[in-house]
Length: 490
Image (cartoon, rainbow, N blue to C red; front, side, top):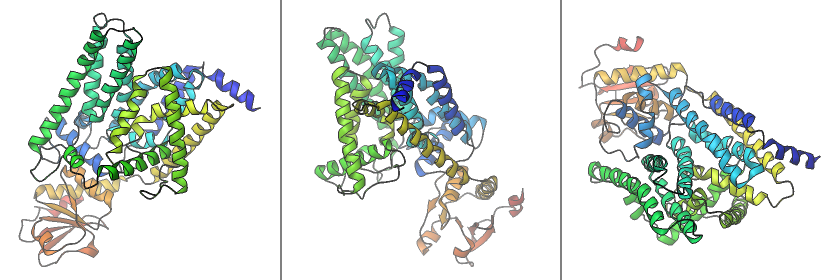
């Protein structure tokens, strides 16, 4: 029975069209949502995108971006269509993933012919990929762009002449420039590309000058883009605010502590990414003897072995990218669930297949893992749908934003649910600080307070403006009150 199933899975690899259509439908179905349950990074990207749509370069009305502008530029047109364009943004994300589907299948087919459809499905139904590409985060653009750029670089390395393929060369240089504008870590494709070129020189398939020219053509615009983004932030950042590079250089941890912590986090992340249902299962930082870390550590060793098997047989840009990307993350010892690992899900899936190939029923095992991932993702989708923002919640936040705009001033939030604060930030397009307590200094330096009636500031100094049953705005009494509280009822 198991052998028959294995044979059927091998035969299924030849039926490409149904697989691609089914996976494209899955992406579209699960990315169709109008609501947004926000986080800090998402709000920053949305703020930059809204300013770009208005022809401005800013974040929360401040010129310092602190985020690469490529992704906000990609979604900025959505703000020309709708005030709350979350559905449009998700459809843009879905389109990017669908564009990458067929090339992804072909890349898997190049390295693992019979497992290609299953590997494509394994990536698409993975909970982490689904989770981060359904939110306004740069992963939604970085993952497909990283993959497509790596393919373009590989094709450029294997091209017989860049003079004949000038359009391909220009397109590749454009792709990698766009990639580093979305996230600067895409620059690590350049050393990976150099390794592929060196391998071709070694086997006399390319002369050194030609290889150097190819590297220079794609590296120059990408490096200029990174320098421009970094220089812009240096010029516009406040003097007391560190950029990400400065934050890395001036870390309080020693290099040894950073490497050990980074190794622990990356091993855990990759395990949580690959193992179905383990995304939120992790050990305490530094605890290598936790049962979860024993599982993740064993998996990491197996994946490293599978990666070595692959690169020994073929120099591939995306596979060569893995060690450079992971080396950087070792010295960037910060935890963000599986967010840092999900961009390398595609090459990790191939290394997993390389490991499983030693098993007698490796396609059956891969199919079982894929089905488990799909079950977990669909279950999570159903749970998240029950937490969706309601129209009434947005209406209440819209009312509060309208009142504040009538008499602008510093606004803080106190003891409110986090989604409420993010809605208000989004609608005002400026930062609304969350404060743990209302002390004298906080009260004296702000104009508006959004809080619950139970946590009202002193009534002699603050005038309440009810928004809904749970939230009340308070305005300083020595300031002008909005012209008409009846705005709330409009």
